[in-house]
Each structure stands twice: as structure tokens, then as C-alpha cells.
Amino acid sequence: MKKPELSLYNKVALITGAAGGIGEAIVNLFGAAGARLFINGTQEEKLKALSDRLTVKGVEHSYKAIDITAPGAPQSLVDAVIDKMGTLDILVNCAGINRPERSEDVTEKNWDDIYNINVRALFFVSQAAGRLMIEKRQGKIINMSSQAGGVALPLRAAYCSSKGAVDQITRTLAYEWAEYNVQVNAVAPTFVETPLTRGMLEDEAFRSFVIGSIPAGRMATPEEVAYATLFLATDVANIITGHILLVDGGWTIK
Ligand SMILES: NC(=O)c1ccc[n+]([C@@H]2O[C@H](COP(=O)([O-])OP(=O)(O)OC[C@H]3O[C@@H](n4cnc5c(N)ncnc54)[C@H](O)[C@@H]3O)[C@@H](O)[C@H]2O)c1
Image (tube, rainbow, N blue to C red):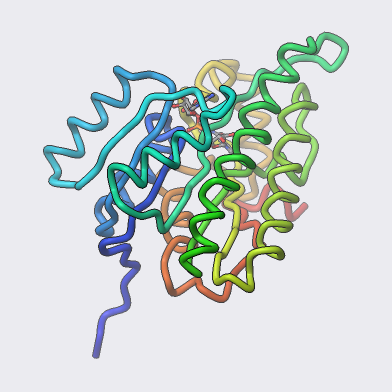
């Protein structure tokens, strides 16, 4: 009997935010599943270090450090993928930021920064990738959303609403592109310890609030988020589109 497997053999995957906590777990898992990778982030030295680790593991890859909120950057990123890898099968939109602050104090700059990366760049990288996928009549886009897209979290008006927008972009693109065999889904984790959350979780009261809000009694690991992403990226999930896959230990069932 054939063993069930989640394979990305020979598929080309573009991963934004690749050198972050969740991004690197996805990079490692996708590489182990046989994908050829194109990794993106803003920090050249972090990407170079990740690239060196992938080379040691024998994972075929290339990378480009670019701020995807810059004008024209989403298209030049996707152009670079085609230039280096020849094709694009999977896009994982993982880049994102959060700047928790009281709604009374939110500045226009912080609001715009969060929306520019979490929503605007995610849409335009998807657009550039989606055009190619529509032409190929095949593709997968997985957006890194958050439980914050569906529930309120204090101090996070911009972040929660940006992830709600990610969920709606996911559903809309899924609807528009289903006829072209392009599946668009999202993964929505609860809190995960990464550089994004490390500072917040140093506050013991906040950490207790987080753990106490998760029926499973613990946060998600980057690897658990990566496995949910891998599942949606493989051909076994070809009939699944427009889905928001919660990886939240039950936070949102209450
Ligand atoms: N950590 C959590 O608790 C958690 C929970 C739910 C959802 N998420 C989401 O998961 C994703 C990854 O989060 P993480 O925890 O790994 O964060 P992280 O800070 O470790 O990584 C985010 C990455 O995004 C990249 N990035 C930021 N702005 C960019 C830009 N303008 N252009 C290109 N790259 C850019 C950064 O270089 C960084 O490597 C984010 O979308 C985040 O909102 C995280």
C-alpha cells in the first residue's frame, strides 16, 4: 500500500517574510517536502544566513531582499522568481507586522505601515503571482492571516482589521480564480513565539492572558503553523479554496 505523503516535489514556492519565525519554519518544511524555494524578506543578512543553511541542506533556492511595500516591488519580486526559477507554483504571503498600541494613541503612520505590508503588499504580490497562475491554469496562494482576523484583541485595531481584510482578500481571490484552478486559502494562527511576539510575551500578565485564553493551554509552534500551510500547498488540497484554517488551540471556539 502506498504511504500517504505531503509532497511538494519540484514545485516552485515563493515565501515572503521567509526569515521570520513562522516564515523560516515554512521554508524548512517546504524544502524538506521537495520544493524549490524563492525566499524574500527585508534584511539581506538574515536572508543570506537562511540561504546558507538551505545550501547545507541541499535545498535548491534563490533569494531577494526587497521591501514589498515599495512601489512596483511586488511585480519585481515575482519577475525575479521567474528569472531565477523559471516558474511559480505556490505563493506563501507570510510577511507581516504588528504595532500594539491603544486606539487613542494610534498614529496615521503606524496604521499605514501595518496596512501597507499586511494588506496592500499581500494583495499586489498575489496579483502578480495570480496572473502567472491563471495563465498556467494552476497555482496555490496561502495567506498568513491570524485568529485576530476573526476575534478582537486589545491594542490591535489596525492589526485585527488588517487580518480581517486578509481573510476577505482570500475569499475574494479564491472565488475569482477557482475557475482557473488557482486555490487561495489562509492559515490563521493563535499566538506563536517569534521575533514578532517575543517582546509582548515578556510581559507575564500578557503571557498569562494568552495562555489562559487558549483551551489547549499553550501557544502554537512555528512548525504546527508550517504543517497547516504545507497541507494547503499540496495537491491533496486541490478542492479546498477560500478556507481560513485556524491553528489556534481553540481560542476562537468560545
Ligand atoms: N507570531 C504570532 O503570534 C503570529 C500569530 C498569527 C499570525 N502571525 C502572522 O504570521 C506572519 C509571520 O509572523 P512572525 O511571527 O513569523 O513574524 P516575524 O517578525 O518573525 O517575521 C515577519 C517577517 O516579515 C518580514 N517583513 C516585514 N515587513 C516586510 C516588508 N515590507 N517586505 C518584506 N518582508 C517584510 C520581516 O523581514 C520578517 O522576517 C505575519 O503575517 C504575522 O502577522 C503571527
